[in-house]
Image 1 (spheres, rainbow, N blue to C red):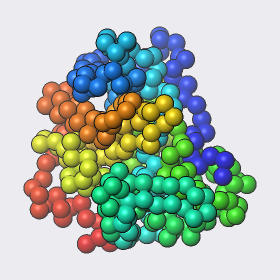
Image 2 (cartoon, helix red, strand yellow):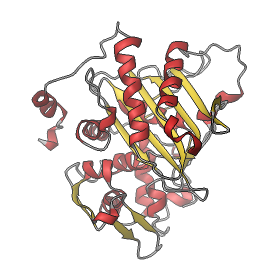
Image 3 (cartoon, rainbow, N blue to C red):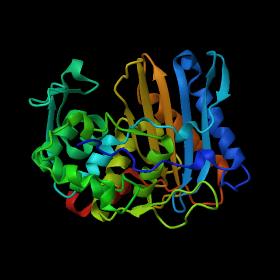
Length: 363
């Protein structure tokens, strides 16, 4: 397996003429920049890039696109096209979860006890962030999506029996290649069941994507499977591809709601609207940097916006709380100030919420 899901196209937005009409809302752009800076001032000497992208969930139009850093650890400086540049992908567990929905249920039990996993063949080592405390123990699959790399890779082993060909076939259906064409996936690799099982690749550790790409993929989950990405009026209105696994999409959306309501993404929770999201921190790279990602959509029942935030941070602390808090603050601004004419407040009672989010096969 040469690459697991390196995107098979290059976004061409950055080189376009400025005369082309974009969908950027300057007010929303400014508030995203302000919240990014406010949320990272304490760490500015350790941050070399941070970005925020807001998309219209239904049209795929990019409404805000901010990428900045700190110049000489002091002044805020724009990074042109920073959100188009590949960084450590943070949606690996979400993509894997979608592949698993043809094989397992959200309530499938995985054992993440110990917090450390060593593959007996490839000898790669996977850890959960709480491994020093003994790991998470037994988890449902939808809980592992939020918390445990070990839980997710063990679920993948159960589903695909360590067969990279079977995994590759499932991966093609997720839309992660931004194409409906199966030719995007290397047919030689995908049909070869003898390829070495690669946990790091399957979890997305070796994959690089831009913040715009990752936000666009989550946006497709939000709107039911249509992957549309539009920066200017010249971009196609029709989807680049359509994710056809409706049950898998619904299950992933429900799991993402749990992440915000009661999981490690609680900083994204809003008092005004129901938010669903994912958050992740990449393994440390050779320069000591970690990519801290959070992507959310809202309102849950009728998504109108998808918001992605990425912070590339050197050293510790580097956790989900940095990007999730920024996402939460931007969402609160948007609900309270940015778009009062749209129904973005859909908070239900706790009992109504619990019953509504359960899928038929989870009740």
